[in-house]
Image (tube, rainbow, N blue to C red; front, side, top):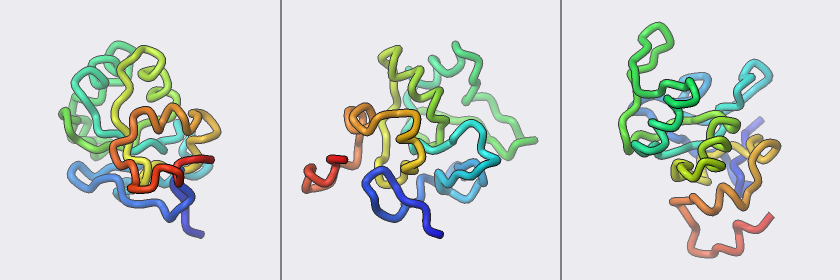
Length: 130
């Protein structure tokens, strides 16, 4: 079964350099084993990375045991819905690639919040309506 993005289309890849995704397949795919819901394709910023570090989620330090090279501003990464929401509430949410953000996130984060930070707005914005 093909996973869908928040726009209702087929889920696009998020990034391969660094290779992202809970399953390290380049997509924000999810499943029952993904307890953190790594479903938001974010383009991380320095502010977002600093916020994540402040809440105990160090995304900058390499962790080879998890095939994780550490992130730098501008990298695309499948972040957890809850931690992105915490950054959103703190005013430092990372930009979001809607086409690569899994629809499963909508159980945690409203589409309106994601749209506020969308960087891939389609030519017909009415397609963003739920």
